Length: 444
Image 1 (cartoon, rainbow, N blue to C red):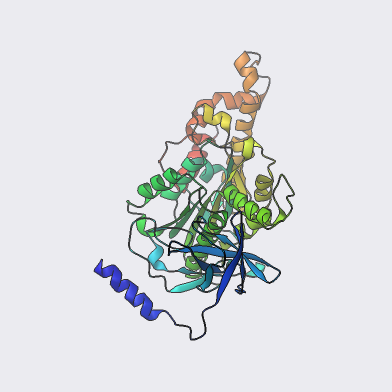
Image 2: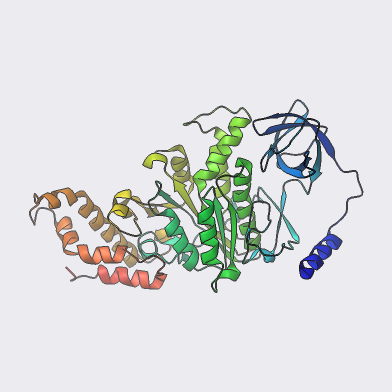
């Protein structure tokens, strides 16, 4: 307790004190979580505190302005809020606090600890929307990235600085696959953003990953599903800011955002509250633009030598691969891993639909022999899946399709190669060696 008080005193001494007046305003309207404030002209993204009748203060964020009034949305519940309540500006507009003290901690979208540990001393400020770089300052993806999953390492090889999507419907295994990657991927720092997930899943994830030897290299930013939409969107932006901060120090960062669809849902709620018309299946243009802006913040930095490798889960509502969020993410990402409900129903883990999955940078990362072996195995898997019904009915005769014959002869080894025990890690070198051994001539 004394140590925490000393930390607070040190933070207060180092905080610059503004000599100017404190900006304040008054609440003039509150409608469905949207609050109008007069006399407080703040930029969009600024935070403010609103007094209530309980003697406490509610935190709110500026999301727009209209007719000289600031439009704010609460970051919590509108408890005992009254007309003419006083609102005062809080902090630096558009900035968040970052620092090395985040390593090994779990925080919310405002940087406050949720793991029961002491308050954080974060000396550095970073723009919440990121620092936009020139396109020519983004270095190419040339170094393979080891994610610890054999099927991805060998057949959709990732690169350091790549942006990859994991796409599937609900309950197919996205969170389990992300858990495996977060626990075994090779990176200097791992930043995990759990957006719109169940509180139990957040607790389980923190308990699993904040106890081992990797704790000092991981940061968790979590906002469960029952929180305000602007808080969920802010959590995704804050996680990206943390990743950018460590990239600026020359570190290789793994950013996992679960899920991009929940971020789009939050942005949709904000857009509709502000009166923006819904376009594609109710998503206003700003909601889909939020996805693009988040994904573009990952990548390699030619200036610092650091990198942010992004893995984004995308929930296909109703297993619809043409969902606007899925389609937008697929267009902007550097590759995607598609999970199959049918494979998951067979107990096949990870349930990766290999023919439908790809890495757009794989050919630049591996040799010609590895690329050829991967293409050959993809063709065999596709032939086996397309002819599965004929084989099961006994309507197929050997010799009718050489590719299917070869796939059936290697069916057992292929399944053994594609499956992996939950929590098990397979290094990149072992994954490529297993691929070479499987596709070696004379195995059939």
